[in-house]
Amino acid sequence: MTITQLVAFLAAYRLGSFTAAAAELVTTQASISELVARLEREVGTRLFLRGRRGLSPTEAATALARYAELAVEAVDGGLDAVRSVTGLETGTCTFGVLRNAAYYDLSDLVERFHTLHPGVKVRLVGLNSALVADSVSSGEVEAGLVVLPVDEAGLDVRPLARDEVVYASATRRPEDGPVTIDEVCAAKLVLYDAYAGWRDPTRRQVRDRAALAGLSVDPAIEVEHVETALGLVSTGSADTIVSRRVAQGAGFPSNIRVTPFEDPLYDTIALVQRRGAHLSTATRRIIELAIASLESADLSQVDARSAQE
Image 1: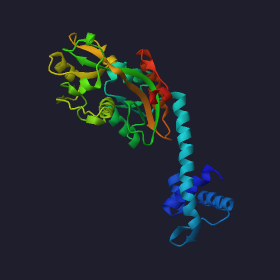
Image 2 (image 1 turned 45 degrees about the vertical axis):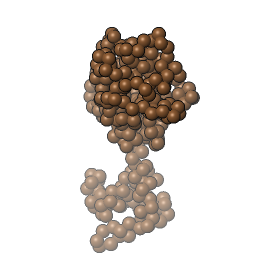
Image 3 (image 1 turned 90 degrees about the vertical axis):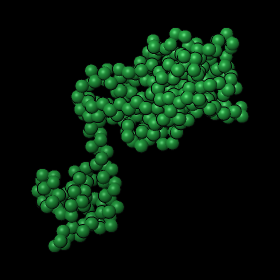
Image 4 (image 1 turned 30 degrees about the vertical axis):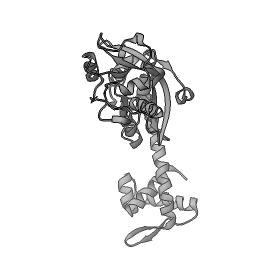
């Protein structure tokens, strides 16, 4: 059995005619007929009934068609992968990044990739991690960087690094000691990522920790961007929570002081992709660049076990 035989069989199966299949494959009707005849000898049964109105597929043909399509698609995918490896000259890369990507040296990811591979189209999605995970799960993007926890159903998750989450306030003194979950729940808070709400991974961790203590978190203000929240915090209007990487950013307001949680809290950054999905060479390349950026950001490296703990 050969791929050429399967291609001829599928064309005849779909078009119902050796003549039409030959026209589509730019060959002769006799060649298609011979290829199908060889395939029938290989499988030991008739695949088509020939009639004046064309070809009628047998039950065996219908059973074979699905697997023939998979075989042809696999070969085509392999050839595409080889062509990509040899040059990365064409194709499309789809990748998702966490909302605060700029704070992790990921803001120029597309520029660096496009400089190396100008012929490859790039589609970079930057959303809350929960939404990036949804996009990867649905196949909208091939892979992405997220903060855990996210809904992992149907995803392969590879933890890469972690960043401590701290309490940010213009009125609370760090010398008062680490902040407790009781204090967080009682404070006037401004939280960002309003669209994602409690699906936001950092919010989820705080909410779950409060629930274990029999408490709840009820923000007084919700905004979309961390920069907006920090602007409000700097006026003393409310407090918030941010990662240390954000707090170390050049634009972080100088009058805001940060305090760790009494029980340390972390954002774990992970790579997610659909379970069992084949990643294009272009996407694998942008993943390499993204991981290199995280490594240069001087974050704590983690493995799957420590992330779960």
